[in-house]
Image (cartoon, helix red, strand yellow):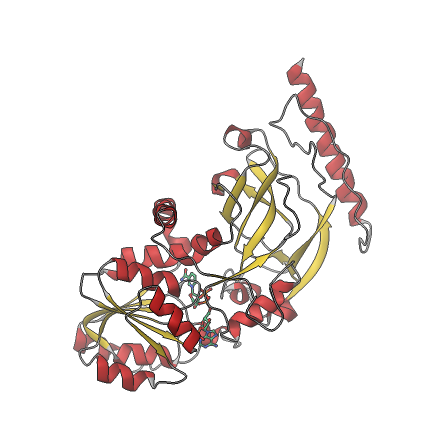
Length: 402
Ligand SMILES: NC(=O)c1ccc[n+]([C@@H]2O[C@H](COP(=O)([O-])OP(=O)(O)OC[C@H]3O[C@@H](n4cnc5c(N)ncnc54)[C@H](OP(=O)(O)O)[C@@H]3O)[C@@H](O)[C@H]2O)c1
């Protein structure tokens, strides 16, 4: 009898969700958002459970409507039905979402050239589980807090596979620093860096989302760390996280400084700027040096996505130093991901890892609050203003778990 009730309730709930979606699809725009009826599933909490919650029938989300590296032109804020989770899925009410340099690569369709707009955007979020399917209830329940890396995070609610959800004790913005930025530095250095105690490691964009972790992990490996950045404030921050030689390239000549202070070159480069910085890093590699190509942000805003580099002389330069250049792309290292996150969470819990968050407070427009401020947060990063990981708070007023 209990099973029958649960099955019926699930059917009714799907009917309600489908009806809501259909009636909203026929409306050109939803202005006021009525609350969804609360259905008491107290006897079968493993199905979608909105008990006591105030989940609306529609929500706001960012959608790529036109392929462009210009985020404002590519992405529009839309109203859409709150999605319904399937059997192995969770419906997450996002509390914080993370901004990544590659958000504009994604909006330009560079991640998957076969994809056509409209599509959802946003790589990572932290929030509360407010609904779930039957299989997902084996490991999660309504009210749990989870972090995740999944496309479509720039939305008030996101459906994710329960397999991708990482249970966390509370929705803290620091957790967002680990999911993409921290994991990239951790796995790239571990798998490709071949760090040895005493190595000199150069980190570009060192005070940013992923750079701050590259600095700390290289330091933990016993290396001497050099970090580039664009302000004295960032240089000061880099000192506090163990960077031996922060270089503010706006006030110091980067090439001359490296030549003078590191005449034998650097053993490893964690390089994410590209263009002339890539060339400079190649020129400053030590014998047997390893350059990790993490990104090339200086080109992302251009139509090609790349700044030209001096490729013609590259084979000779690498050969003369027995040096190597290695590309790294996080999605190719999923097998390392879980272990890496656990290891970073442990370091964070022990107070051994600084996870610097930039919520926009120091910028002109104030804190990044609400989906609308994702646009401003992307601009802020591309203006080189961020110190740490850029994070947007989607629901600062909502203290309730449901
Ligand atoms: N391969 C992967 O799987 C992977 C994963 C995550 C990130 N990444 C890459 O890592 C890099 C950093 O990404 P993030 O999300 O962590 O961003 P971020 O470092 O938090 O922010 C970007 C920083 O880059 C510098 N910058 C911004 N625009 C620039 C420009 N036009 N020219 C030169 N420098 C510029 C600025 O630092 P300064 O002003 O201090 O120089 C800025 O603070 C990007 O290249 C990204 O694609 C790669």
